[in-house]
Amino acid sequence: MGLEDLQHNFLTARVEDLVKWARRASVWPATFGLACCAIEMMAAGTADYDLSRFGMEVFRNSPRQADLMIVAGRVSQKMAPVLRQVYDQMMEPKWVISMGVCASSGGMFNNYAIVQGVDQIVPVDVYAPGCPPSPETLMHAILTLHEKIKTGEITQRRRDGNPLHLVETPDSPWVPAQPTAVRIGTPR
Image 1 (cartoon, helix red, strand yellow):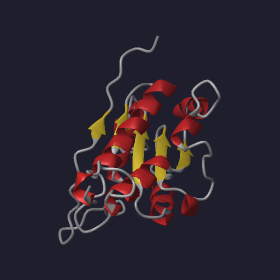
Image 2 (cartoon, helix red, strand yellow):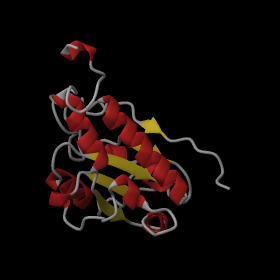
Image 3 (spheres, one colour):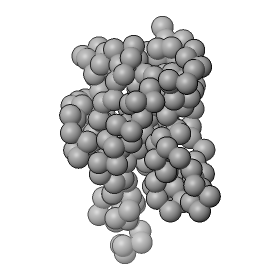
């Protein structure tokens, strides 16, 4: 029995597949809860929903220990530089989930004080829709992110690094990647 006759297992797996598995199984979120969506994000960490089965039981307080940012709620223009600073301090590879309609598109706050979509500040990988989205929706967004990490689709980062801070310049335009919108039915 030669090595080619063996089934694909941990001894014959590619290192790239093992790294993807390890990244998917150990995503550590940094919370960025700004409004009512943050309550639903906290509820997802309770015993009823049990995020610990995905290896995410502890929300990190330091961005240097986290690789997933969950932006939950509306982002004001004053908070936008802080959000970008926290994102820049996170380790690579890093991912972003935009939780709620306010974070995704500004929601009902269509005015000068609220950022009309967090993707203007940081690159968003998965959107979790709703006002506020339920903990099940956040968990579905996390599972969608896990699938993107597993397939390797998400490790191909944006062209030439990260998006610009708040202003796009002609010499370095930022073209966001097409993120995944989570679609989930009404729970229960």
